[in-house]
Length: 272
Image (cartoon, rainbow, N blue to C red; front, side):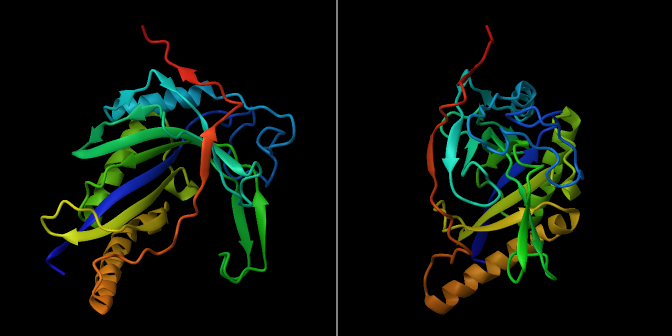
């Protein structure tokens, strides 16, 4: 395996430190009784219209400044359409081709983009495992639905799982110092997905990526390095058995349709 190297890019979701949700006036508080922080807007009842949270926009722009990004003069919200029980609207309000921040870097890792979106609700799976497989039922708690999220997407500039973990620690410290989030990983305020592929050492061609999802708690963060090594071994093992140079993806991402949100006005900078 010494003639191959991993290529790692990260997608980090950060719950922003705001008093209310992204598009409504429901107050945010961790650990409240289920479904007590909801309203017609975050439950997507007919006729309810969203209003963007100004502080959330300011927080994302602060992240952009801390990561040396280019800040947009104009930004647009989009609807990312998909059906899932934790999304009562059957779409997520996010950003697509006009995010708030582009470019930038932190400790030599390039930032592709930083955009603003809303979080989904929380699914609680009833059963011994606590996971959807083998559960007797799934209960939806909508308290988290509509929480403002910043998604930070890096370029695939990392080449070791240990380096990815160290960089994520640096990012967490940076975000805490700016005050945009409490970055409490145990409460899900910082969650990270790692996109991992293999390529021959010295090659500039990217391989087929596989995703290690949901690295959030300290225990899972410690397992991030192990996940990267496991993915590398699995990809190499697949190639050895089949003779293929492609890495077998862990799962296939469902295609989603994206369109500009008709209920959210474009955001424009007031800079002179």
